Image (cartoon, rainbow, N blue to C red; front, side, top):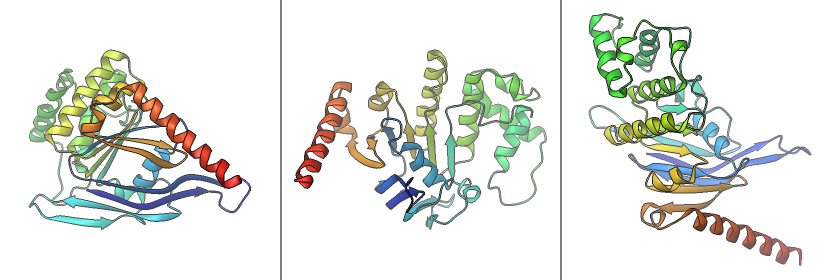
Length: 272
């Protein structure tokens, strides 16, 4: 579960360049929720991700994440003031650029070893035959033959292979929350479909809590159990699965226009 209360991010406050990037955002997700997020450029989508991940500090508000342990116990953490590197133990993030999630000049097995050690507590682990077999077992799930390329540098792989590998390694680290930032947008249609299929399969199998920014309206409406629209740093629409199933792209566009028109009408009333 993730809970966000009254999130605000204000850049250059109190100056002529003041910019309210997030304005009183309140949001709650339960384990297994798959939330798609739409909005025009500058709507606040990436700033919301940066605030959750700890990349930018909050001007106001609090963020709570409930971690479920292997014994079934759950602990809610207030991560508002935690550094980005600490949040990375339980927040996974995949970017649009497929090269960002892996170290190209390192071998595939070294990339996976670094991922495997993420947040590991216990005796020292080493890269041995048992560990390589473990990696191969997971790599086979991608259906790309990467299980036979453990000794190859990752820079030799295609963009689709690297994004699939990033997704797999992120899932293997068992994040409490997975942030997808247009993670298929830079891929050709075939690879984008492969990555989305893997995303849905892993999200279901691991009961992941997922937030996915997308400009693909078919993905926004067709995937997940909830849809958010953001504008000017605010959540202006929050649609559940049943309602989303009845919507079309034209419906979404019309709702956005209606909301903006109401805002204009209110502004005119205030100005008298």
